Image (cartoon, rainbow, N blue to C red; front, side, top):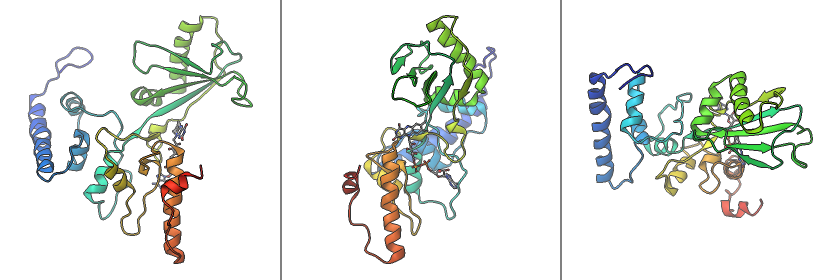
Length: 277
Ligand SMILES: Cc1cc2nc3c(=O)[nH]c(=O)nc-3n(C[C@H](O)[C@H](O)[C@H](O)COP(=O)(O)OP(=O)(O)OC[C@H]3O[C@@H](n4cnc5c(N)ncnc54)[C@H](O)[C@@H]3O)c2cc1C
């Protein structure tokens, strides 16, 4: 294992410990699930259920190289439940981590880009400012004059969200100058929200990992005593969308209201509510 300067930083003790503490345990965990006829789950979900966390950078590198990890961000420990959530609920949460979707708005003194709603940028680096949107077009924004919207997602979104406005602006300008020439004007303003760093959002919306089942969605939205769960992530049909948030919120609110007011519980199914939209 080498660092960015080429220095050999292999630590065999850590590698050995990783074998014992992670890979062997994960194998046994997987076998136990199989013996109990439980479906296979991604390695990250298994690790989280086992409560294992990397303690140092080398362990993080091992995680990525030795286990086939998803790139979505696992939930933080900002909320703790006492008593702890049952394992089936934890599993459903870990299978539905938050993804990152970053919208960068730039205001320019004049439009210089192609006259298309969507302009695609093909870069050798995957996901490098891939989608540009012209908000200057008629009907887009009343005050949209000179605004270009650039969207980045996933790992690139996470990287960009760690940067300052100035750093991101400089990168974008280098890219735009390559496309439209050195003469283009500098933006007078830049704005983007750092969703991955927002402690109440922790990302943009949920992105189920491979292998997530209908039962996982049911478990995510299943109540625990008087504790109800709603939100886009609980909707199998509409996760990632406002519809999922609205419909699941409405459904749970009606159930709760029914219990509070002692009126008959909700009878219309989610499918009926979909008709409203
Ligand atoms: C950049 C971006 C673009 C998107 N584009 C689209 C789109 O085009 N179409 C679409 O349908 N959807 C889109 N979405 C997704 C959509 O916005 C979400 O699916 C939806 O807002 C989720 O609603 P929710 O009620 O489930 O969760 P949220 O809107 O996240 O609501 C959760 C609330 O809980 C609060 N909260 C969190 N933790 C705590 C705490 N500990 N204590 C108290 N309060 C807390 C938060 O502040 C927040 O107000 C987009 C999202 C992003 C970020």
